[in-house]
Length: 246
Image (cartoon, rainbow, N blue to C red; front, side, top):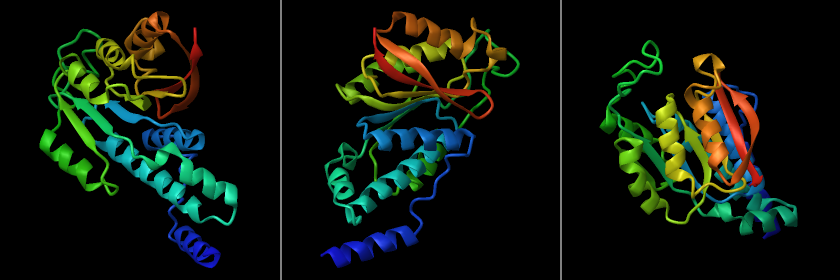
């Protein structure tokens, strides 16, 4: 048995299932680091994304998750007993659900930044995006799409999540108002260990009274949780960890 375990482990490593993008500092690298953090800590929970656009982030997240999931399975054939025991008992053997929210109709009318985030920019085709993401779903993860505004879809999302926790919360909706709606929709499903990605945290010249910065500050003031900066990514992205309760 030990011989076959070693052979399987050798084959998995040769297939290069564990590649690594930890030094890649774009959006894809940010998501890779998020999943690396989740698997390093064996944190159970779903993936929720507000602002899908053309699906690039969702695809990157699926690809990163797949790499780490395959890594976890490879540990079951390791020659060290503690690695095999940990991988067998990890809650991450249970695949998360992916929850993806967007109107797919572009930016709403707003007064926050009419140049960059003008109405109808970031328009996408819902059916094409669904197909694009589905083609990358190699592990047959359950993916729930919510087409509509975040406020409109809050109840549907909450009914789907029920009492489940969120492992990764990816908020890529640019505007303060939309970010507030997103955070309010999931406030009962985040927990200590949750990682939050704000893709546009440093937009609006990093002004504390605008955009995602203000939305998150208001949310923090009213939340029972304590948040801590984690890593930055891309040109304006910032991640946070939920690290405790007040």
